[in-house]
Image (cartoon, rainbow, N blue to C red; front, top):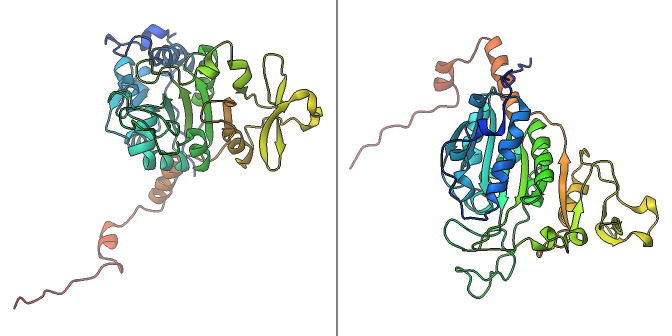
Length: 348
């Protein structure tokens, strides 16, 4: 038995302004968060969902101020626990569209376990992971995605930690939808957000987001017009993976891993064709490993998008089946064969 509960829709046309609150947006001037906020507010009207059936849940960090600025329901929760809270909400209220807004420190440090378990369970929620490779709210300490040797206030001689690759982490947790985009590319950002919104299950979108105060220029190689064509690897489902303004380089398999080579040095059939719908995540994971710590060869787009039953749907179906069978017996549960009595001990 399967019970379908759709998120209620509205017949009233919506605009971006309908999703803006009266709160003053308080991020540093020039922060990439402004662009992401505008992109989300701009594309949400396309979904045609009632605002009272949309929820944004955040943890702690600069990005986690997001719910204040969305004219929907929202919760500014506790450090790293946004995926856990959102899981409970999505599982108990299938009529809601649930979004998580988090940062690289919030999601991958104290919240690491919550993140990977939400991904593996395939709860029907969308996770926007703002990655600026620094702790911005607490004024510039290194984060789980800071590159090796990063000099910060907390690592004056350089970080000794090898960084997480958020896309690799998500794919390793068997996430059904994983994508990466960049704050400064509004068109690409919007297209990825739209694809995530349409996915049934957990969708993780890593967003390269510039912190111009504490880590300015962290992604300049893939954002600057002079270098981005050389180092950005656009992923389009069903198309050969080419990069460069004229497609002068391509991605091929070599000795069991992916490499970037000049297109003129290989035959056309050797060029890898991207397939985001592969059940086996090997290709998607190999693409995630192309990225160097300094952002050379950074794939952007949807790495993986596959169908798998969602945790909340399976849970709802299981409860419905139990109710059809007459429900559970609480007395039997409390006094069944798995209980025992601890004898009283005499004090000497």
